[in-house]
Amino acid sequence: MKFMRKFFITLAVIMLTVQTAFSTDVWVNDLRRMFLKNSAIIYEINLRTFGAQDINKNGIIEFDEAEESGTFLNAIPKLDELRQKGINTIHVMPVTPVGKTKALGTAGSLYAASAFDSLNPQLESKQSALSIKEQARKFITEAHKRDLRVIIDLPSCGSYDLYMQHPELFVKDKSGQPVVPADWTDVRLLDAGSETAVNKDVYNLYKKFVDMVMDLGADGIRADVATNKPAKFWKDLITYSRTKDPQFLWLAEASESWKEPVSQYAVFTPYDKLLAAGFDGYYGSYFNLKNYKSGSELINQILATRANLAKFTEPKAVIGSFTTHDEMSPILINGNKFSEMIIWLNATLPLNSYFVDGFDTGDNYIYMWANKEAFKTFTDDDYYFVHRGKLDIFNFSRQPGGKQDKLLETFIFANGLKRQFSSIINNGKFVPLKTSKPSVFAYAVSHNGKSIVVIGNLNFRNIIDVNVSVPHLTSSNIALPIKIDSIPLLEKGSISVSLAPGETQVLLINDLDIK
Image (cartoon, rainbow, N blue to C red):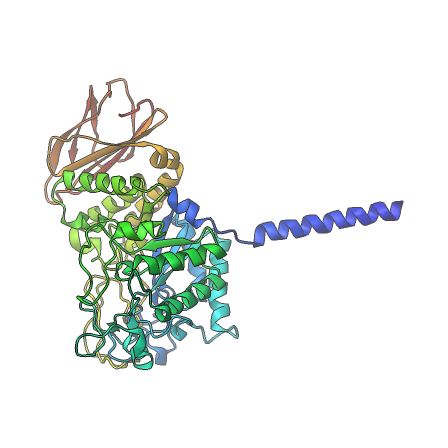
């Protein structure tokens, strides 16, 4: 009996140990659920630069000088930093091999995919015995250990190299030449077919990509320019992925602002058809913030986006696409105050926060060697091609990052606030507030007797004195300042404040439901 008792005790200990190991080591994807609750705080990275080691600090990676560009492995030590900044999801820009012919930049554009079923050898660390797939899998596993979900970018087009190998995959113009979409001279338009006849060859190409990234352990896909493929193409692909992982996220690069195809030969599927096909979310049109002069323009966009999402029986969501790798650095547009405004809009609106690498420290993405002749190239382009003021995706360049420590503090604080008040922001009633000055926007989000009030000045040159109407506000209400530069005055039914150029104020009122 003593032997049996010892046996069962030992067995119980073993089972408990195994159970504990599985509970801590096995990652369970929850990204789709989190995204649809507007709880994702997403950070977009270019792995080729994310962990780059620019020893001589000249902004370009010189392999002859023992410098190393970003890889799957040297990105791992930086994951702790992302977690400390409040990030819970990483959007990894394309990891597919890039084209070298008719290329842009000395490394080739990340979005000029020369294959869809393999990984970019530029991201492989030569210091490791692990295969590139094992390195990629390790990167994702290490992200998961830090409670970071991983979205992988799916390129929209193929490189010229891929066209030369498989011309049958591409759309041809009237003269039989492959189509250059928009002004993207380094890629050619893939032929995904139509709503009635999906091109199985291109579909299978993308299906292999889905298999690859899911095998690596990724939690979702961001579909680059999703509008240039038929809805049925995406519906079949998304349905396929969900049979393998129901929580696998699909984010469409699409917007209400986009109404035209990238070429006369291209398909155009609007954002609502993409959502109906199974995408969980899209970009919206928040990148237009840089053009807004009146607060009503922003408020109208918020209301329109919410109305668009409400049309669907299944939950859908958007990202705070105020700034992306396609947008010029906010620092160059309207300085630090514009970056702060973007941070607080992401933190307080019912959407998924979204930022690009370097934004949080104020990188202006100005490279001193930009568009000059290169000393060395790995493509047929002899110039360091870049888009001014935008994250470099064409060359082996430095890590993104600026020197704005105060902006970083604001970034971390706001991300923490988004988590702390998630029940208010995600479940509350969004209420636009009337303002006395056109350049000022104001809104409240109220839930269970608590209200977050946000007031922002879109005039980045002048101080604006403004009154904001707040229904049911009384002088007895107490507003806790979350973020203010000047002191607001609470009166019956209104808040009066003098806003600095570009200033955003955030207040918490604990004893008020604003309706």
